[in-house]
Length: 173
Image 1 (cartoon, rainbow, N blue to C red):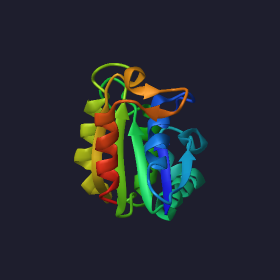
Image 2 (image 1 turned 60 degrees about the vertical axis):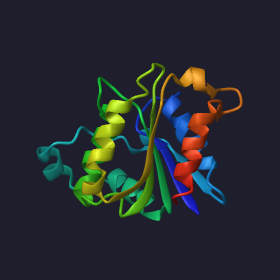
Image 3 (image 1 turned 120 degrees about the vertical axis):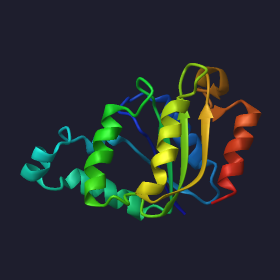
Image 4 (image 1 turned 45 degrees about the vertical axis):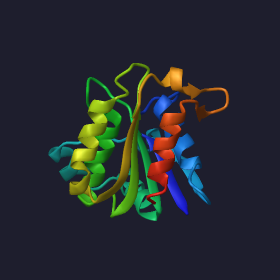
């Protein structure tokens, strides 16, 4: 099973990337590809640029990565209650190729933050819009207080309730 995992942020040391990677690796028989959205950076989307540039190769490549996956694991960072600018831009460009950019793939949506909110606002937004973009959401999990619930040295969750929630979602794949 090909699992595409990524954090919806451009941070190189992203806690969301660690969470996405951890979750993807819990899937039995998974070939995990941990994607860095920095590899898909493009100019800010607007209609004028779209007329000028058409569909950028990086947006097409990202769309292809989504299409090649059997399962998609995304962990959303939250900037001021919403998507990061880097992810939103990539999402906007890619959705112009095909609004159904998730291509009816099973998706696990996660979020985390250092604080107790666990980036729950952006996760709720992503979940609410998912049907419009052909994401078959198998479950959503917000991990609050990341550093209290994740062992950085061993790369794993330490909170058994959160581990159980992730494993429960994985059984739905």
